[in-house]
Length: 304
Image (cartoon, rainbow, N blue to C red; front, side, top):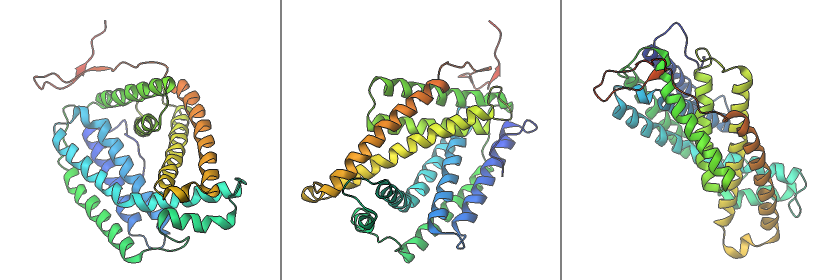
């Protein structure tokens, strides 16, 4: 499956093809019991993110924007079903890494106890009935969405019309960078992470048709997405610890974990903003004028 538009296809045909491929993959992996729960969860959620990135890219030129909004809400619901298990899996990975790195007062032998306290799960335990129900509900939502894709229609067949969705997200991501350069906060970084993730998907979707999208840029956007994702995971860990009784979270083991997580977040913020400065230096202009209020669709932008 190639998460790319093809030069040989129209905007509508390409959008519907990509959407169907992602949906089929997500349903297949969610029901593949030969894979671990962690892998199934990760791959299923990744499919949802790719679909939401595609919808965001094509929405400005859609003839059925309300239908796309409804589809996006369904995808958000599907992602939420998988979110808790994914978050628990990530917390275990972070705790393992911290203990392995020699965090003060936190040794590998402490991981299982802390993990169970933060997630209400033991290290290898699964809730089979709940897992089965979650994956079934996820698959049902995604499968139903496949029928809606056939009705997706657009104001323009020219792939250049995708500039509008790309540029809108790029500009928002650039604004997010500037806000975090001024004053980084967990809330601002979380919002910026979402925009960078969509921008990363858009660079991949448009790789075959947009000049300047070489492998280096695509890899840099993926790297920035990963850095901000790791930051988000550390914030999630912090919030889980803050949810413990005050007396417990003040114990030395949790104070050490919180301090190590704080240092890691600060280092990731510096790394993310440095990399973003290479990616969001300019403000691109579209190659087509926007859709008119009279519904004439997009047309070629006249030279100045």
